[in-house]
Length: 294
Image 1 (cartoon, one colour):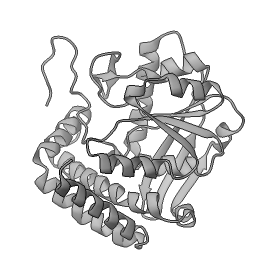
Image 2 (tube, helix red, strand yellow):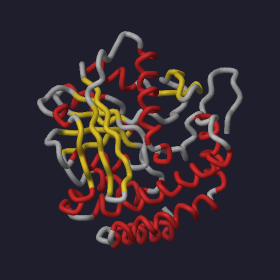
Image 3 (cartoon, one colour):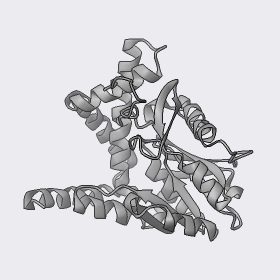
Image 4 (cartoon, rainbow, N blue to C red):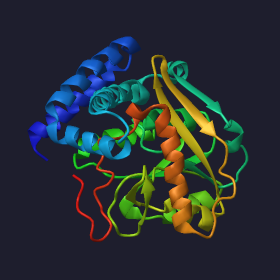
């Protein structure tokens, strides 16, 4: 690793630790400024966002989509800076800023439970709120970062509170399945494009999207129920809602079950569309014979 890159990474993490006790309005104000700067400078990523919004919200005018794109960059920056206090502030501060509510009784007992937690920018806030409040073992799947210093920082932050163990994508499903069958909780975020291998094409906002059918597979293999956790960025911190178990799930139809997850996700996005992870190339993998969209 380049010494300069390592030094810069350590300095950035040190700054995040320093910001952990800053007043929330100050952090959010800084995120507002940073978000507008990113929108202006991150040309390639801005084009990705604009393409996603044009595909998913064709009913909006160009001006409306531009405004939504600006807001999504602000949310991206604000939630990134919030990881300073999520991963470094005392638990007492987190309890003041994280509002966990909804069908919390779904976590009671030892029934294998899958959490459908899509890629909203506040996903780490949602995970922290649940893991620090629910006394059950949690597992999940992580993608290692190219920068080992940042990768270690992220892993430390995500393992700080509660009974959490993250498996890398390369480690496969064995560890997650074992924990799930033993009565654990599996956090799944199956709404990103990981290529065509092992995926199915199902609609997402009417566009065929390569989607990992992991919820269907884990639910069948572990006889697990599936619930949803939806985090929302608020002026006070985060609102984290737990929703009731999906009825009549899983079925025998893997594609239908996977599409059901996408349909649910659309309803979540409609409440706060600026907070979804539009910076990702969700439609990068195309069905055979169809042209690229980015």
